[in-house]
Image (cartoon, rainbow, N blue to C red; front, side, top):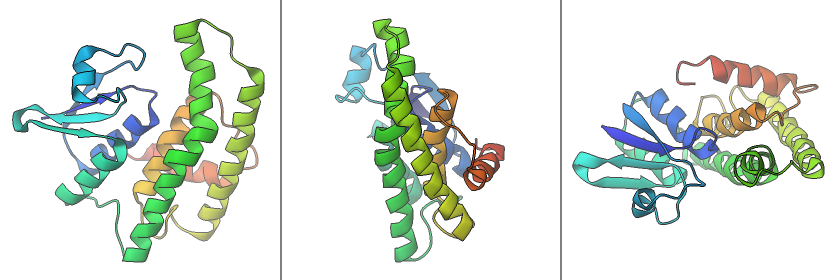
Length: 201
């Protein structure tokens, strides 16, 4: 069975977990706290970051959420998440990168640093200026999701895709850390409510 080394507030771990749930892939969770940096985990991933997906019996170790999700797409036929024409697949990958890179850098990472890392590790108070900036940028990202949901059934087009799960994974962490203000974002909030209602979530 697969083992998913993850941290519950790692949005990339959440993305992989959601994709595996949607595809019906069995796995067990192994918690890895990023501030501990155990030798055993560094032996699996020298970068020391989650997620890592391991199949012990096959001696297979997959690192990085993008690589893991691509592997799942290529090896598991059920519930494809990067689908459609070449142009449609390119749009899915564009949006996955947008949320994995831009949303994470603008919103999720500063919230995690200020409201999780400082509290648990450095015992410092959060910087209110950084939090306000992250929440302001969250509004801009939600504006774009509003536009997408006004013009498409799902974020990348007519069908549910990995783009929806990448976005939902980031938003779920930011929302948990009280960095999301849904006021004025009915489209994004409705889409997120549908995502949270899925069994895979």
